[in-house]
Length: 316
Ligand SMILES: C[S@@+](CC[C@H](N)C(=O)[O-])C[C@H]1O[C@@H](n2cnc3c(N)ncnc32)[C@H](O)[C@@H]1O
Image 1 (cartoon, rainbow, N blue to C red):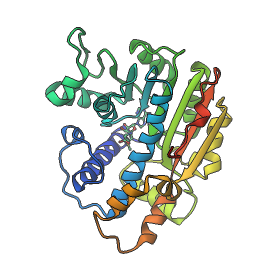
Image 2: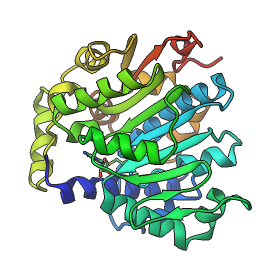
Image 3: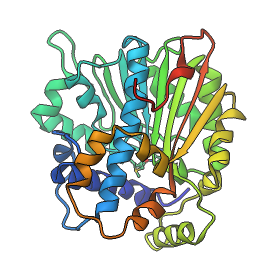
Image 4: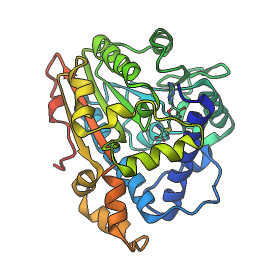
């Protein structure tokens, strides 16, 4: 396991990058500034466009899942960090029956603190007739739950999901956004298999590195190492094939994976035109090189054939 503090620090980085891009106008998120303070660093346009593509593509798949199930579904965000999706779904009247976030306890404790102390966050998780249950690292409300657990400890994960009232028979979407790469590939494979063994109707959205075997990948690995942060799961990020296979060989019916250059081209082109006007970009090759090292993967199992194989990035 990589140094836990170093992995936890990657959440502050991600949240700060998201806040920066939001303030530049890439997408709307009134909640991210309540989770993380403003950083001082300047972020290059390709980084901001990368976050835009990451956020938007995950959101497209997630919303399709929620609409397909008519909101009679559950969302489990693995390694959620300071993700604000729950609040944005609530604003869009797309709240699922249950939304559970899991991360290391030091992260969930801090997020619980932000929620407790900031009304715009707290107001959206409270119902007049329902109490909130709070401990140091966990919070349970009517449909939003955040729990501290290590994703490699499946017994702990199971216990925390049960405490959140997860119903395994309900369609459930699992999200891991830049998370599995920090976990040894054999352990993330066990997690992926445990989910498929326990949830008969499930969808998985995974965003992370790909094509990591080249020079660019090695530089990324080395840079993180200097911060005591190890990409222990990088062997699963070798290719789109290895990214899909970790699902299909662990009980999932099928999987798809796209490099972020392809994903970017699938996004609504009017929006792409809008965001490309926000900042000038000198060298598009830098963006393409960066985007070729990240991918979006989705996988499903669907015993009742509710139509999960239809979910993709296409616009209807
Ligand atoms: C790069 S951050 C991404 C956070 C969030 N998903 C996002 O994209 O904004 C990685 C997150 O995964 C969490 N994480 C990594 N390994 C974990 C594990 N074994 N158990 C629980 N959380 C883990 C970290 O604490 C961190 O919050």
